[in-house]
Structures are given as C-alpha cells and as structure tokens.
Image (cartoon, rainbow, N blue to C red; front, side, top):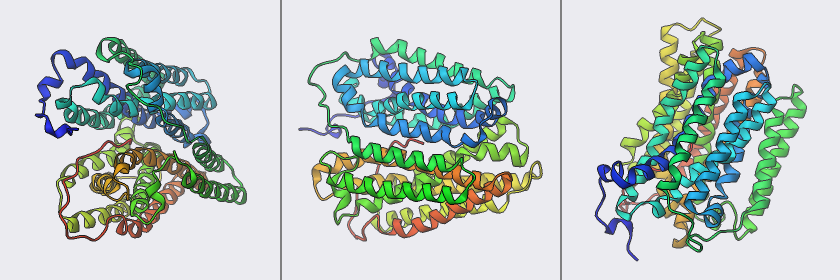
Length: 478
C-alpha cells in the first residue's frame, strides 16, 4: 500500500478551480461555519445577555456547545458508514442550521442554551467530517492541500467571527448575526449534492460508541457547569469534587473498554498520557477567551466590535506561534519548545491580570498590555501544539494505534475545552458582583494551572538524541 506522499503533490490551482472547487468549498465551509460560530457567539454574547438576561449562564453557552461537539464527533465514522459523505454533510448542516435558528429567535438564555446544544451537535459532525471526507472526495495528490485548506479555516473564523458578531452587536441586532450564519449554512448545503460522492455501502466501517465513557464525561462537565451558577461555596465545592470523582470513573471505564474514547496506550507506560495531559492544560487555558469580550466591555468600556477582536487575540497568537514552530526537528529543541508552551501561557495570562482596571479606566497602555498578554499566551499554545500531535503518534506502544492516538487529540481538546469553559464560569461567578475580581480570579487561576502544566509538559516528550520528522501543523478545534 502506497502512502499519500508517493503521489506527486497537487497544486492550489487544481484544488481551487475546476471540478474540485465545489468539493473544497464544502470541506472548508463546514469547518469555517463551526469556527466562525465560536468567535461570533463570544463577541455578541455580552450584548445578548443585556437583552435577554441570564448572565449566570454565560459559561454554559460554551460548555453545552462543546459537550455536544464531543459526543457528535465520536459519531462521525458511524454517520459516514450509514449515509456516506453527501448524506453525512447534509445531516450535519441541517442540525447546525436548526440550532442557529433557535439561537436567533431565543427570548431567554435557557432557550439559547438549547440552540447552542443543537448547534454543537451539528458542529461536531462538520468539524470531524472536514478531515474524514478528504480521502473520499479528493484525489490522493490533493489530500495535503485539502487538509491545509480545512485547517486554515480556523484562521478565517478567528477574524470573521468577531467581525460579524461585533458589528451586529454594536448596532443592537445580535440576532441577525445568527441569521447570517443560517444563510451561509444553506449556501454550503446547496453545494453538497454536486460536490460530494454519494453513499457507497461498505466504503466506511462503523465502530462502537463508548457510551459509558461519554456519559461519565458529560455528567462531570454538567456538574461543573451547574456549580458555576450556585452562590453557596460549600455546595459549589461539593459539586466540583463530584465532577472530579466522575472523571476518575471515566478513566477507569475507558481503561477497561476495548473501544474507549482514548487509545489503550494512554494507560500503559508510554508517554501518551503526558502528551494528552499537556494538551488538556493548554486547551483549558485557551478557554479564557470566552470571557475576554465581556471583560473588554465591562472593564475597559470597549465597543462590542473592539471587544470581539480583543477576544480573538489569543487565537491569533496561537496561529502565529505554530507556523514557525512546526519547522523545528531537533528533539532537544522540540522538547524545549513544548515545555516553553505552558511557561508562555502563564506569563501571558499573568500580564493581562496585572493590568486589569475598573470600568472605563483602562488607558491605551493597559489595553496594549492586555493584547500583548493574550498574544503571548496564544503563542505558548501554538508553539507546542504541532509537536504534541507528533508526540501522540510516536509514543504509542502499538504502531497500529498511531492514527487513533492522533485522532484522539481533537477529542481530548474538545473535552478539555468543555471543562475549561465550565471552570471559568465557576471562577467568574465566585468573583461576582465585581467584574474586576472575577477577571483576576479567572486569569490568575488559569495561569497557575499553566505553571503546573510545565511539569506535565516536561514528561510529554522523551529525552532522545535521534532526529525526528518535521511535524505538520494539525487541525485544532479552537
């Protein structure tokens, strides 16, 4: 069997013109919808809660979306096996559009959360299908270009989301931002019948869904989310402790399962568990961006558009960090890069926390410090990320688990994002009614988590003098 690298590499012109233009548009469009929605929602949410209330559920908008994404991402293979690329995409787009419509018409935060859950169910399918369908919809010589195009959509979402959400929020028309997203979803769906192949029975094999593991994870994340809206600190602490116990139960259940969320090598003497734990630390830290637009509006008096782009600063640093880092190949340098990741995250979040001020009191200098802090934290995540992907593939004891270990990175990240968003909600609510205290508590706590992550990152990659292959930048569900 030949590898994709045996075939001559295709060109961007071949991918983005002629017969494959529609295919490329659908693959990229599905991920772009998911990514844009993430940043669109965070930029318009402060305006939305001023309209419909429910600030205590602020973090839930991210948590329920991510939990639903985790569950549906585990179903990608099964949906492909049952419906094929064309049917799977239409299902994902239809669910995503339905959830977006519910968000657009929601009169209360509770109904908005229902919409976000439906959105996440469709979004998790779209994010997974963007990669899973490449080999069926494109010729082998265009696989690398197709994967790069799909990955680039996260950069598009970083800017399109805050721009769309911020503009509509600034004019008090936040519901119409979701309306634009619905129109874009319909446009992508219209291309699917002609751009993707129909179902061919037997072309994809379904796999058992780890129901027990997913149920334990979902219950744990929801417990932390509920803890975030309670005013009694003792009850909050008890619920967080219960969530930790459920996570321990998840590890035990997944370890015994033949078809768990994580590959079996996670639980043996390999370094894979440390790779995943490093990813968890970085992914949890990244969820501070959920509250950055709120802090920007409440503490600095920024307009919704400006606050939205402030929230995207961490994601921009992530992208800027991973591009040059991916070219590093010397094991010693790679290991230092990975360990430096959590260090930079801690420094960046600490910088922003140190320059927080009360409402409208942030001058130009403080705002520059905020942006620098978020960029530094984002760079810390970005420089480590591509090497952690390679570390996952090379640390398994069974060579046949390499692909599964790599695929689990996205699942681990989504799980960590869900718990990070829930924990962020707990910390912010503990700090209420002072937004300044909430912001300081969130940023300093997550900086402390990043410091703990330095020890984890040091064990993620083995000390070895051998040369390793240059890693490629991989997809991240930011």
